Length: 246
Image 1: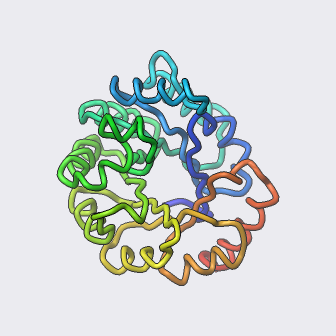
Image 2: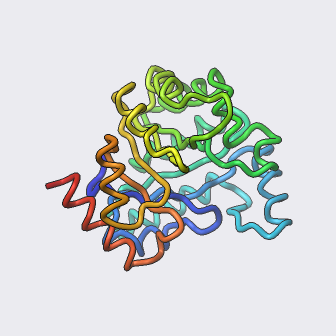
């Protein structure tokens, strides 16, 4: 899906085109965002900003995404662009997917964020327990021809990620981006249950952490908080090239 098999994971309010360019020497993919794209998710994002979290809140989120993707294209940035979006409603997902399709970018549906404000409006990890709605998001997005995936997290009560991944694959998803938390073995369960491209996230810092995820069957890994640290990125880049591309 991208090479090298190292992604930069989205950091709300930080992961823009400039951030992606800075990591392009090391990573094969950059997930811009997360971007709140409907009224309810934007209202929640404003509440997060009110308590001092950094969020992207442009007047027009779709114009913002278009501008960011165009910026990467104009500079021929050698990285696969992707966009992580939050939405409590279905129709904006189609619009975001169409935009990504036009720019040959991946679309990642956010079923990962756990802030109370986002969960209260039906975004983030609440989607993990609302299988039909999440599958509907995927079906809507794939109808545009874009490549679609979902970012998920482990350790959510009542949610069996391997079973959910099967549903997402049936709905048309191509990849799943897994924040493994302290349950790294779930990567193997998802890889065994589906043919999805599996991106493993959480704690990826060095050769040993890459090796653990590769042994569990990950197709790629992603770096979150240290995604602006070239020392960490170079170390992880060398590890994924050696272990996944050799």
